[in-house]
Length: 423
Image (cartoon, rainbow, N blue to C red; front, side, top):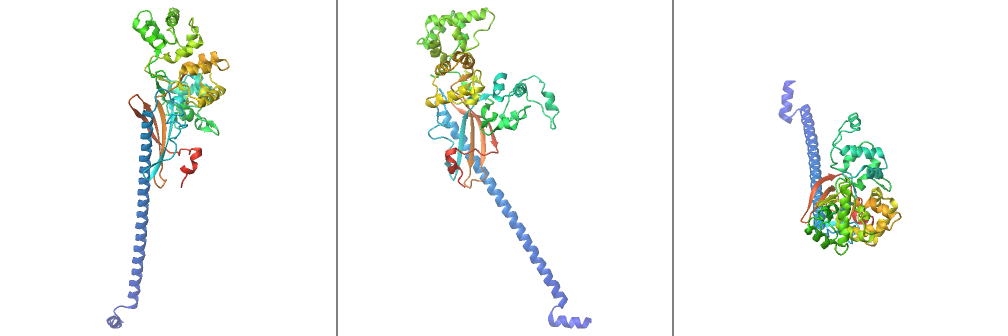
């Protein structure tokens, strides 16, 4: 048998069984190489897809950053004397920033909101928060969250499935409100046509304490200097001489003296001007834009009535939805140019003197704080990026004090849906 196999091998080179083994090995080798090639190809495709996605997201981020820079530039050159919805940054501007703005092969959209057109949750008192939320317990929980001392809600937070402690310091972001006891997603995000706290609140709202001419206001309690410093008298009459007489200014000083002699620290409200002898409401209307209770260079927590929603106006002391709607209708005709104009408007409303007395210390016409949301769309319109920033404006610069990346799309402008949704 062995001799036959050797003879066959010499004649044909391979035995039949051996040739079959080689064929099977060759087939296995081809299959293995094919599977390996497919695997490598799939891995390469995944890596390429990941690289494209990363590139698109980076492009979206750079486009969003470009939108932040444009918003800063527009705010820097905007008229700082008053801020209105018709300004270049506002939604009612002739060329709204919310329109798609091409940049290279991609584009971005910018939305700017006046932080002073919202309720400052770090400054609002309990009554304002109650009117804003409609729930006294939630309002109390918000106040307790930001207060430095421990509150009755601390034990509640400690018993949660994932316990945490209240900040006991000012809110850093609006998202913190979702951690506060009683704040529901519907209350925070809104439901249907009802806006939520995220649309009505801000964690800061700062404005320059200046009149419509850009000059520093005079503190009412600075009138303690009236009798001793002729320089102060001269500066007051330079600013108010067209509105008030020396007698009027002297009576403001006498009013301050009476308050302090009764144990009070002095004037506590601009509305107390109505108690000064000889000061009619006409004189108050003309003088009030130049006066202030807070003598600081900046004021925090005042609401800009030229930009606030009616729901924000309704939450202010003396406010209501009817008054908010009336203010919105009035500023569509022309924004309030001075605090005196707004005071005159309040006094013309039903129960005007009472509404004026309760609201006038909580409002302003300008802002130094703005909330900016920007979406950057790369050329493929995949991998969009959304940035949200809080900007602070000074006379010389506009800078970012907080910036974060968000996960949601900006809703398209109603009249620009076709442009934004081009996919």
